[in-house]
Image (cartoon, rainbow, N blue to C red):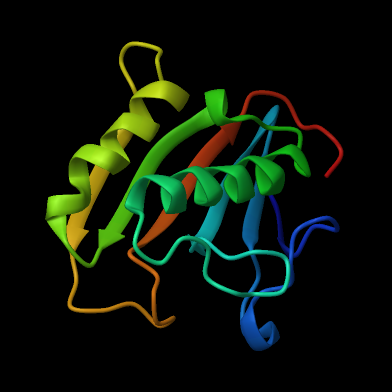
Length: 139
């Protein structure tokens, strides 16, 4: 079993370089990818659409897709999604983005919780993803 931490090129560096975007565990003919929580930021680290949970969700999954792609995976490889929301009233907007991106049945396993706040002012949600890559691909 091989394990490594990675910050893929093409994805903005984590805040203060305090963590890795992805932990990869290569297992036989596949790999498990555990992504750090992602918030909706632009390439300079500024929050995108502070008052729009749907727009933030779209940006978050764009970042997630880029991290996954760097490891040979796609949103179709997502096994579990964990979401932290500052207001569960944003669930319909978030859910609409999720339904569009994860149309397969059944969708990935999921956990969603409301939290009092996130580390970045204006961030309405943070999303963690676990994905499985069926065959080991360069990453």
